Length: 416
Image (tube, helix red, strand yellow):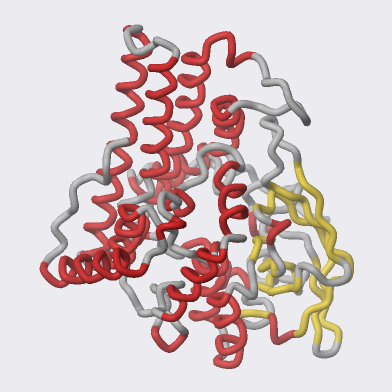
């Protein structure tokens, strides 16, 4: 596979930062973890990456590398220094991600705790909450999953029905959540619950952190077409949490949730395409092995796919340039999400076309498995639904980027 694309000139200070970081990684990174930087990339082939990560985390070299990164404040490095990070801006985070990928070593990350929960606590939490929860995210003691989606509300987050009732110095939560990624690996959940049913639906929500391993919590996997079970449905029956775990105060959850959902991941801008680039070259190799690289139609489709990956790369560079200029990205996030999700669905179709009739049959083995490209074909369908459907992204682009009139909304029936 080709090496990382040419570097963008971001000025002498960033160039010096890049050089120093590259030197440090070369001196400190363990050879045993070489070639595993794909852990930092988007998941593009079912649960394969997660399985590789779990296996490697048992290696002593991983623990030593994790400790070294923590010692040098390279876990959650974009967090302010007072909370255990380095206060890196989005440009330096982008360079950091590039250099770890270039060296082929994992940048140990804390998932939703790092990118979603932590920043929300930093903005809305009390000093006591920051002192308690943030170090536990950096150390890896707390691993979070998200409890926003519910079975009957689709993308209408404000329609949450999970109830939270204050009982003394505790909040008691009951309800159901769904499409929860990583539930089986989490010991904490951040969720929205309705704590005041008598006010506007946006005004009566609270943002709560709960022990996801405690009494009253049950979850079960949702099996996908590919056979994988990366998502879960969760049942909360009288789950108790101290009021200390309510971030932003009671009935202020909508504001906190908007911070969570709006947290800008501009630091990943220049590397977001790399998982898809790796996957593209894997598909080219599959086409070679099957003798399909001389087929004009296959060549045309592969050329189209390569163009899309390059467009992702240049779109990321444009976003990074905006961040570097101090301009926060707007609806570009919806453009990117729509682009990669629709692209990946079509790439799965191209892959099955290259596989030919073999792509129509599942391999022999336990639990009715699928091949890598069958997994891409099946699992990529979900990409146009989760994190906001393609239809919602088009609405956002039309209204916020193009200035088109808002789509008429159906009026809610009058309540008697």
